[in-house]
Length: 582
Image 1 (cartoon, rainbow, N blue to C red):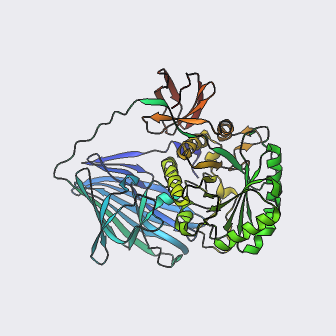
Image 2 (image 1 turned 90 degrees about the vertical axis):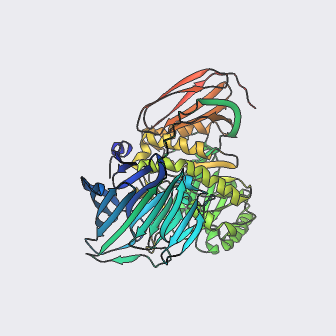
Image 3 (image 1 turned 45 degrees about the vertical axis):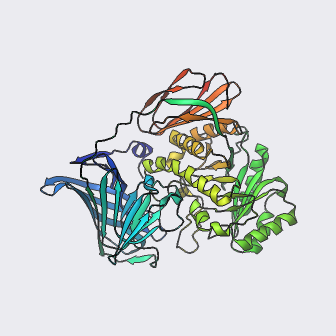
């Protein structure tokens, strides 16, 4: 695995060929523009194993050439991970009016896969845009990119796409398989994704040694007149006295560890300790005991999430925790990961029997995806809804992690639509998945362990990313968010104390319920989170770019603050100002 520095400061090779401009990021051709007009977020090859885990691509060689056809890149790529390997070449050809990517792959050994081939990542600002879908049968269907997050594939049986943007006509031609499009905003990915091997076909598929695959994606562009690029100097950064929301309560998940470290002296203001108990797992009783001890040390209640296969398992799980110290109680199916009617009724009965007076919540143990797809079966008498988040369901590159942050806000707004105004308790929010919600391997739990942690967890990046997440989720209706874990590789503390993310969490936890002020203007990669404190403004700021940043921010009293931020860091500035709110 690449080191933190290699991931945070990964090379990006800008390709300019005629009117085309793109960035080569490892094996992905990204941020594709034509004459300054955005085309697609990116095109890349993916190889996924039978559990939908993505093999890591490594570019072994790059050849560049120019010919009568245009500028060409030839990449040799090796995919490896989870006991699987795959070899491929990517040919990327820029011509006057087209960009074509050809994938040719071969398996060096037998393995089982759910997906191999090219994917096109469409931009999220295509939402609401008309598109003409050309089907493999030859017919054409007028359609539109969805505005609300679509629970199911908006486009199926796709052979071509045609759309218009800023006076340019774009086309997409796909070959080598049958393609369809899904709304990746469900997983907080900043894209709609067009991919091959429809999910209606059986998976996993057997991939024999020596078997070959060839696919191509061709993007075309035409315009009566090349549009002049827009120049946007950017508005001034201004913090106003208008209140937009309040700082949500922050809670702390706990994972099983043989050497539990109390964080009572480090995080005195967290709202609760969140514990997930899965029926039939040997560590459930010990985890419940550790959660109770942690909650007692912090003098906070428990947020208990039960996962069971059958209703008769719920009573036993509930008996593992001190029922008089529970602030929220939820239940999910252990393998389908959503609240199902029979489990919900059993939870209500068990809670009443045990004298639990806490809020009963429903939703998804996993991603917003499962909540979205099961919106009609969400219990109408649940007091609040919940779902979890991770930015690395499909990609591990840092740009994808950063681009997921606005999508977190979008999922929350869509979840509030589903909830009918009932509050949200979001989390756990983690850098890596806590478990594999789509595994096809029998008996695969996927919880905890090294595979669920990211080396970036202890890096200042995690604090900067978390601030971006809290800023995105600080909207009316989001009452609490739980982040990361108390200890362990995915935690916010270690034997030496709090990580940068832990220190930020400690500070923000004390601000619960305080007003958040409006920020006007924006800068790429800059997060501003101004909290109205008693003595002025506590201005939390993060730089989510690989470059240093210096910006001037106007405060409500008219004074100006100069912010200087190192790459991938978060800071707190205490600013004394005249307090005025509207």
